[in-house]
Image 1 (cartoon, helix red, strand yellow):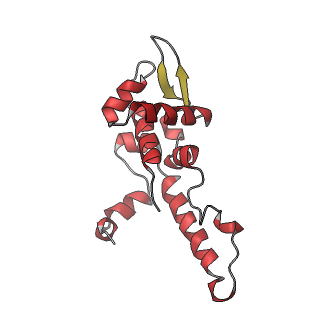
Image 2 (cartoon, one colour):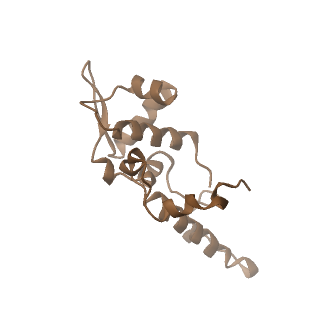
Image 3 (spheres, helix red, strand yellow):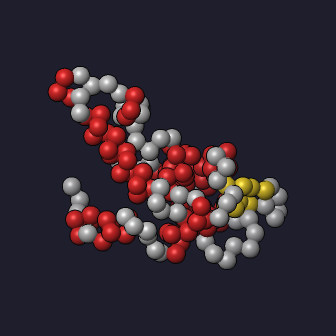
Length: 152
């Protein structure tokens, strides 16, 4: 699975919005500076998150962005889907819509299984988990294994 720059930036921006101590809307330029994200790209991403109902915004001197619901109710999976679409596709199609013939028939099961594992991780982790530095199971167990950190 490849995480696009857009998805990475979207999650990082949402984490900035989830940080404790926010006493009002957070300006886009502050998020961009804090996270090292190009401002114009960030504004487009925040617009997509707003369109998806994950972020709210207000214009003006007192304006900015904030999460539309509590950080413990926003998953990483939702954010990625909002900016990049489905979590796992094969040639742009959902795995359940594919059809393989002959010896390749079971390949569809592999792609569906892969998507299920991606969901298991990304739907388990909320913004609040990341901000608190406490990853839920099964993610905590997975990343504690030495082989998880090996590049292949």
